[in-house]
Image 1 (cartoon, one colour):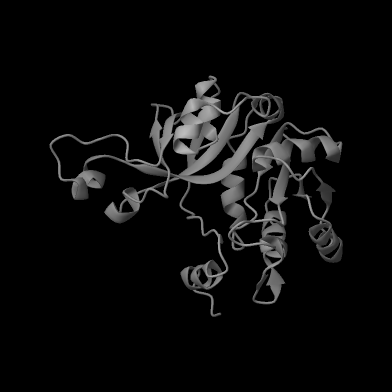
Image 2 (tube, rainbow, N blue to C red):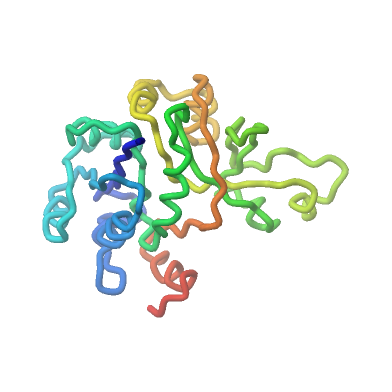
Length: 249
């Protein structure tokens, strides 16, 4: 049976929202909400927090969350996840990188990704169908070009593919577009290998880490989800997420 460790990367230093994991959302911190939602997963064997800050570590103790202290200089959550896996010291088949800024993450969303983590899957992530013109052409939303078996061919902030001889406002009616929902599951041996890769040209061009993996030939399985992601990037996003979730602030 496949064993999977859930890791929540939690940095204190955020340019747009310093101390974000400790931000209060209706009586609980962001980190506590993410941790509690992750623990509700039926398929994760264990959940830990990976942090570089003693204030977050202290909070983990207060809420009873397992944690490890990682180096502060990691360039990405992927690198932090691998160090956390090593420091944790237990053997697992896969590591699932849980987004630490989605306080109302649904545990069923986690389980739907975990279900595809059979031993032959190298990396898995999620996608959601895009049926809205304004979202499709939002450069902040990452779109995915897929193979016939739903492996990623390319990720882009631009709209791919281009629909010839059609009004752009109608493109989503001519093609099944998907945008990326950024939760990742990595087979542990693959996680170790991708953290050794140097930034690639495509990655630098689009500012998308996953393009580095594709450029080096790693396969990314994309799993459709009906759960949209509601991330908190700035303090103002907290009220926005509460509204989207129909929760009274």
